[in-house]
Image (cartoon, rainbow, N blue to C red; front, side, top):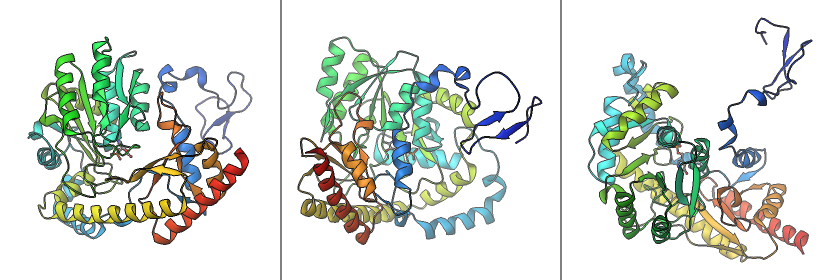
Length: 426
Ligand SMILES: Cc1ncc(COP(=O)(O)O)c(C=O)c1O
């Protein structure tokens, strides 16, 4: 590794650190004295640790929140990619505006209107995944000490963004019908003043809850009354196994920022998502994005805008996804019920997960996780998702990626893991 003009430097032991020969000063690799305070605020390596264990050879994973590879519209993407390169390479491979290409902003606004209140492209922008949307919202709106209300448990990536901006969290109980807006109302009446209320309105990660129309209406009314913004993060809304999706909270009020991931609807690899925001906020979010990455990848925007521009594509594609995931969810539920009587869960109505409880007083999900991993099965214990709630006997299982044979094998490994965990615990 090249030095920086001082003494010779050598690569460290494979962990990305650099060792300096012959100098005094800080210990090799220890830059903690230089780190900004905020680097420790939102930090959690729990999920990283769990997901890298899930990627070990021979491990079947029910851990990651990733879509099934056979859900990707590969043939259509190949066709559209060819077309974009042959017809519009000069612009598709060039820099693009920070807010997004015109065609992709139009596609985001169109999809927002189909699933919520009508929005013009001037209120839409493109982000590098909804995770970037969360980061932009946090950086734009939160000062150190500001309060963010959210379901407990919640999506860890959102918790990290809010905490990383120095926010305090106001955890609220949540159930099958989503956030308990009655409890939010009580907390507001008692003086709590969140700047943001964060919800995942459909098939919540991890609980699977769907925020009811009544609670959406309540939330919008509370936002008007108390002046907070609703951050509606909706990656799973397209994955309902039955029935129509409910319209976005923005049909009930205009204090809503919508994060519209395409990762589960199309594929995560392009890192292209939509965001819509009230007019007075969009420019601020775009300014934050400019200093972060200038723009989202132009080529991906061209490809996805072209694909979404075909009115026949999305309805047929979504019907296929719903059948695919609905089938996987039902088959997994039947197996879990047959083989694991100690596992409590509700049938998912959409999305990618089972949110489960271990119905044995001595077997914690951490203990089960360790034994499952030893058997070659990865799952996610509940505690990292929980803010205040006790997650020690909760866990999340994804049904999205395993095929039928792997599913049988995975459930069988989980059964063995439970027997061993129980033998340990009693
Ligand atoms: C609730 C929630 N929000 C946001 C994301 C991130 O989405 P994206 O891939 O668009 O960044 C995920 C990913 O799993 C998620 O579950």
